[in-house]
Length: 43
Image (cartoon, rainbow, N blue to C red; front, side):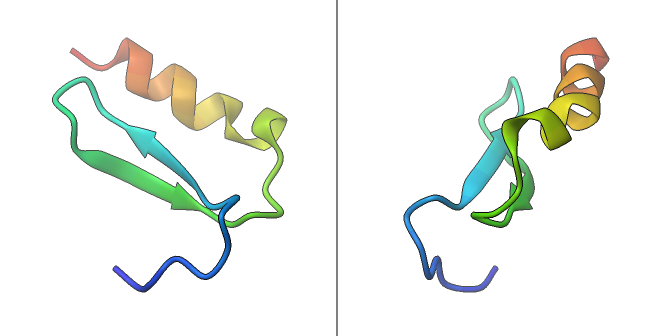
């Protein structure tokens, strides 16, 4: 994983505490919806 260059970098964290995905500072919360819903649906 590369260094965090800006403090608005977002991370999707799984139920077990692992990083599932990293998002750029300019990604909007609305653009993360599909990934968040998929993570919540995962067993």
